[in-house]
Length: 207
Image (cartoon, rainbow, N blue to C red; front, side, top):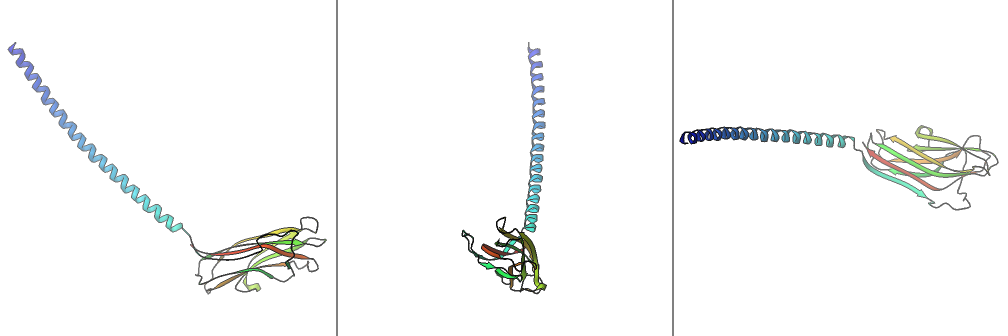
């Protein structure tokens, strides 16, 4: 019995020694895991910070800023029957103007125009819509569109919609834009009118 008990004690002691060694290894492994986890966390954190900074930088780089906005509007409600407000000729007639002040070279200007046209003639008519920068002269024409309007009794009433992007030149300071309308060169004898609603907007944007 004593011999068996002694053997049992030795075996028990051996098991306890092994357990202690096993716990020690587990402890080392735990420390290693914590270090590894901490390292992974830092790597992810650094990577996240890098991505956040990179994304923020790219977002800031691609972001455009509205610098100034100008507009002119008139006759916001259409009157029925249609009012005959602007009898058009074959020369440019100003529909609306808008001015930007202290503009900066290289900025862009987003222009939007809208007005309505009515043809009271027995045949179709051409209507020219133009935008001039600075003053009304051929050298300052920056946009033009031509719309054919049907004869009276058909599709003789329509709208002219303009959208354009202009780049501010080097010598500009205060810039006025003119939205104009006119009949085509072969429509001189036709009765064509421009009317509201009229809207003309210009927005300077820094890229």
